[in-house]
Each structure stands twice: as structure tokens, then as C-alpha cells.
Image 1 (tube, helix red, strand yellow):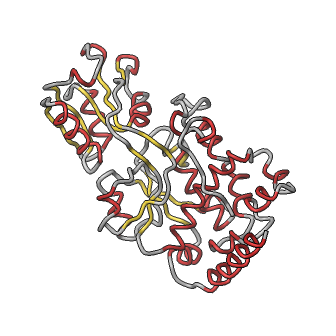
Image 2: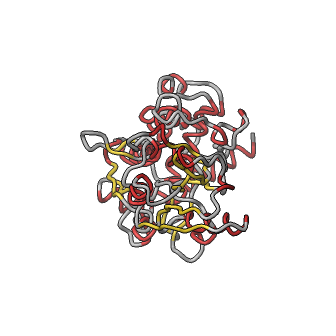
Image 3: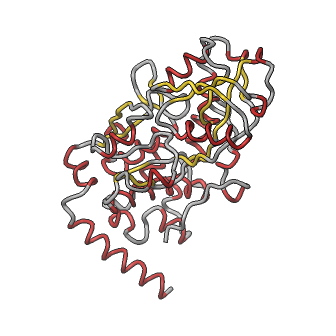
Length: 338
């Protein structure tokens, strides 16, 4: 108990310091009146516009959660569509505040590029899609094949590494955007199309005859995905990181969009701290102490967002796999809110 009280006292001191800050990304966002998020031109399940032009998706929920944490208004999130080769440049240059856009965490990106990865919100891996008529059941049989791939992605390097490792040859066909690469594949200019497995499931739905194509079983890389921020603003980094953690922790604790109001009145000390009834974690991050309650009430917990856009309630019907909670055999795990 003594250690907990000391911790809460430290949090109160941090809250006072955070309130005194007048510079940094969060302060600029508050002054501007909205947050600017980088998004893909359109990947089903992750970030896509509906008929009314409204953005929806698993990655979009991260940005809307941040908008709710800061402004208590999910519509205070604005979106900038970015190609793979332009996404990090836009973040570096200050065109966007955060990049929650299917961007892999790698060492080279985290070093010397002025950007920092915050937290993994989706564990993915790269794969291949081929036309069934090609008669190829395994990526190991793609020796000499032409492969469509998007420029400026980790997929290019992974592709080269995979074929070199197996001693196979291939003909790369690199395109400026994923959309161009997919169109070239569908037009028969390439034998296969490669990108992350989740994206393959999404883009397959765009093809004129989805059933004429199949995703091969091999997963050739690790692709931990999540939001990025500019390097050097620890306060903003922390708010983004802990917003992702809050979605996961809510699922771990059984806090849902439907019951969060009731759970906010819980006598469970762990839930009370998490939902802002004890301590001043929100103020320490530069937002109000009920920020988690407002986030979950608006977008739901991690599992609810996943099922809505990627899982059983979506067209993709993806399994949780490594994105299941650690208590259910997966990798998703929130640091403790204490």
C-alpha cells in the first residue's frame, strides 16, 4: 500500500508538470482543434472510406480514440491519405501528428529517420497471392516467377531475402503504390502479388473474381504493425502508446462499450485505477482522468474493434491468431495501469 501511495503521489506531480507544458505535439493539436492522422489510400478492415466519405477501420479507431481522449469528440480526427513511400516522410515533416497506418516496426525505421514506433496493435506477416490457374500450392514453387510489390515497403526487402535464402530466382515488378501493384497482378502482368497477409485478405475482395485467387500458406516475415510518432516528444509518444494499451487492457478486464459506465463504478481497485477513479493518470498524460472511460464508450475495447473490422463481424473473417490476448494463447498484452 505504501508503494502504491508513493506511486500515486508521483503521478500527481507528473500531472502538474504536464498541465504546465505549453509546447509539444499535444499542445499544438489542442490549439488547432483537431488531430491529423496519416492513413492508407484504402485497405479494407484497416482504413477505408464509406460511400459518404467517412473513414472507418481498425487503424482509424486508434485515431478516433485519440480524438476522444483529447477533445471528447471522435470527429475531431482528420485523415490524410498516404502512399507507402510517402507515409514516413509526411510524419517527419509534420504534415500529420500520428501514423496509425499498417507500418511495420523495424530497426532501420526507428534509427535516424526522426520517427518512433509506439506500440504493436496488430501482429502480421508477409505472404503471396496467386491465381489458382497457375497451379502453385506453395511459395517454394515460385522459382522464376514475376512478383508484383509496392515500393517503399518492407515487402520489397523481405521478398529479396526470401528468394535469396531459398536460392530461387524471381523477377520483381515494383510499383509506386499497392493499388498499382494489385492492378498489375490482376491484369496478369505478374505471377504473384505480395504484401502482408491481412492486406492480402482485404485486397482479394477487390478482385473481379476473388475465388479465382488464393493466398499461399507460407508466412515469410514478421510484421509488427502500429502507430508511429515523431521522435523527441515523449509526452505525445506516451499518450499514443497508452491509448493503444488502454484498448487491450479494457478487453483483458472485461470492460466493453456496453458496460463501461457500470464498470466505472466498480469497487475493484485495479478497475478503479484503470478507469480514472483513483490517481491522476489522465492528467499526467495531458488529458482528463476519465479518458479511458470515454475512449471505450466510443470505440469499444481492442477485441470489439478487431471483430468489427477484421474478425467475425467483417467481410474479412480473420482469426485473432497472434492478436488474441496473452491469456488466450496470443501476443496481445497490456502493461499494467498502476
